[in-house]
Structures are given as structure tokens and as C-alpha cells.
Length: 136
Image (cartoon, rainbow, N blue to C red):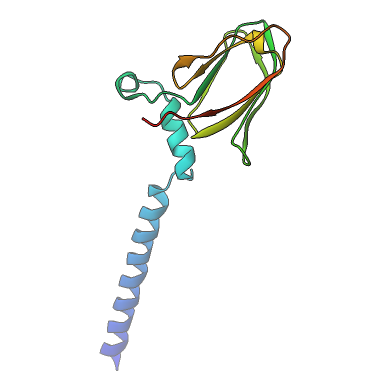
């Protein structure tokens, strides 16, 4: 009976080591971010390769005034991506397929839709619009 116990102990130790290795690899292999978060992070990370393979943002907003009043960007029926003031020179870009944009002062920002400049709004005028990503 001593040999059977020894065999069982070796088998159990082997199973524990295997589980530790598999669990450790799974833990180290995950970054904790969702696929959408990883995609957004990659999309806005600057680098030498980014220039040749960069995607065109669905919408890009740049603040031209000292302070741009509330700029709101959200996914229709979903997450609010931005709801805040911006500072001069600050830029934001979003790559979602469809976005609702609300500008408290349309004359204080420069907006680019799918890489094309949007007509400048009037100072002090509120403007809202929806942008859809171009097919390509």
C-alpha cells in the first residue's frame, strides 16, 4: 500500500504544479483592460509606426480659445466620453463608429470629421450634431 500512496502523492503534486503554471501564465498574460479599452489605447498612442498606420478619427476637436465651454461627446444611447471644458491647444480624438457632439460655443473649437474640417461655428452659438465614421 506504500507504493500506491507514493504514486497518489506524486500525481497530486504534479497536478498542483500544473495548475500553478497555467494560472500564473493566465494571470501574467491578461492586462486587465477590455478589448475596447486596448483598441482605444493603441489608437491614441503616439509612435513612429503610428504615422504610417494611423486611423483617421471619427471626430477630432481642438480648443482655439483660452477656455472652451463644455464640450460633450457621447456614443448615441451609450457612454458619455467627454463632458467638460477644454483649454487652449487641447485636442481630443474619438474613433467610435457614431458619435453625438454638443459644443456650448461652436466658435471656440475646430472640429474635424473623418479627417475633413467641419465649417467653423459662430462665437457663442451652441451646436449639436452626429458624426458617423466613414466606410473606409
